[in-house]
Image (cartoon, rainbow, N blue to C red; front, side, top):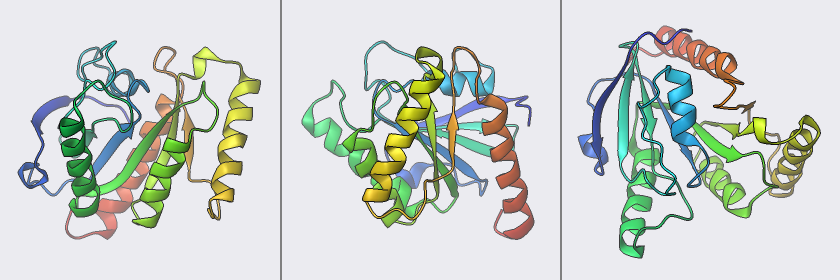
Length: 206
């Protein structure tokens, strides 16, 4: 799939105010400073579609971008560390949960994980929440250009081991990406394209 148009639609902290259009949505979420904005900009061929920042926790709203006029890319606040007040953090953690548990248009979430680090408990816990809540998701390992192929394979194996230890029957579908080198771009967009085709073919709501 080639992205021809990517248009910012709305930012808000109230799921009820998200777009009413019944188009498939793909949500991107991860720990703060995981490289989410850079990945979104790489996928959409826009240098400044999602705002990148050296300050973790920059995204604090639900951001909707209309892609090719037929699906939404949703940029969500990071979980975990962010330089915001406890009150602010509790509010956006609440609307993240609201989004995942009530948004009917959501067809898949992409949970971003920095491949440079060994398996982090916060990521495992978040994915466990997604699994227990029956929210479909894939893993997107980011910053693959920063470490060797051997370390990438080792860190992915460590995630598999931890997830199996947490009662997962199998590893969720995953992608290895680099926003700097556009690694994984075609694979991710092809996956979204395939899911969209299935959604439009089999679901009369869309």
